[in-house]
Length: 161
Image (tube, rainbow, N blue to C red; front, top):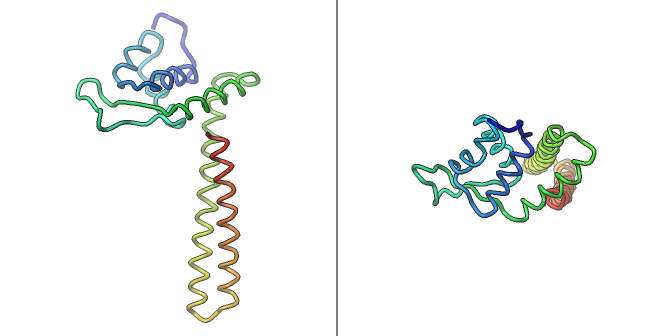
């Protein structure tokens, strides 16, 4: 490495920029090799996957490795979040903050979806067992939790792009 070390956020940005038009894994390492270690590049690729980087298995090459792409909307969403948060946070903290926020949203959605399923199944069991009032109450809870899950999912999609 000849240049000053780059932050993971900057490397992630470069990986996503290259992936807009599609890029092979080996090409990413060759392009970023002079400015970052292999470990930093692997970390940047892993972080880029949190922001929509995906593999195209049909284009995998034996010598060049995995082929990566990112949807334009996901790239623009990352750029907007990066610019909006960079004004008040150091770059390393920004990347961590974005990843933690994404994980929190996923956990929130998973919890509500699981609760919806659990309430629905428990309500069905109560109805079969003859506890109709309790079963109906649990099903009502499942409907409310399902509605809440739908609203949260809609908000998360708007926020995450």
